[in-house]
Image 1 (spheres, chains in turn blue, red):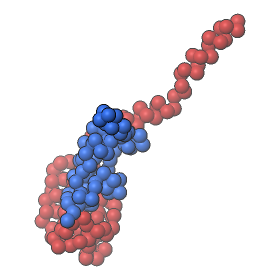
Image 2 (cartoon, chains in turn yellow, blue; image 1 turned 90 degrees about the horizontal axis):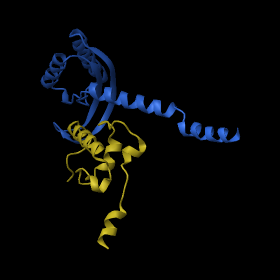
Image 3 (tube, rainbow over the protein chains, first blue to last red; image 1 turned 135 degrees about the horizontal axis):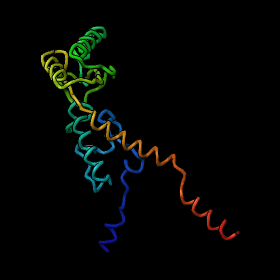
Image 4 (cartoon, chains in turn purple, green; image 1 turned 180 degrees about the vertical axis):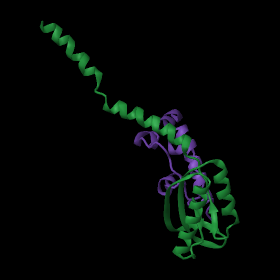
Length: 75
Length: 124
């Protein structure tokens, strides 16, 4: 029974499906989809992103945070 | 990309831009584009300011020139923050990927040609 729950969420990577090549740090609207209200980064098992895209996403979010397009944390 | 004090008048920002441009071209680099992204709300306070004027430069230059520009930014009071991103290697990889994708989409599907042949052979 527990196994069924695990396999139900086989989500596809949003970037692979839409064939987005590069994740730009300036695109704060796209990046904010992967940043919940606490302003941390969504883990891969929840967002369904594949690992190379997750790495690119993390780099883009860090750059956006440094240039104040995304917050580091919310109070 | 750098953030300038939003309370500065536009012509001073233009002056700053042309200063940076001059710096790059004097060192032998090429300024490919200057984009003024305008006033935006900052995600957090920087130097007690909540808004900032964003400027984006796309530059083809050596490391030494980039270092000099960054040093200038650090000294200037009106530049609140700067970020330098290197894009040449990523661009090359992307171009390769795009070229492969173009070739794939423009080629006809070979399976249909193979299917046509056996029926022609059967007819004869």
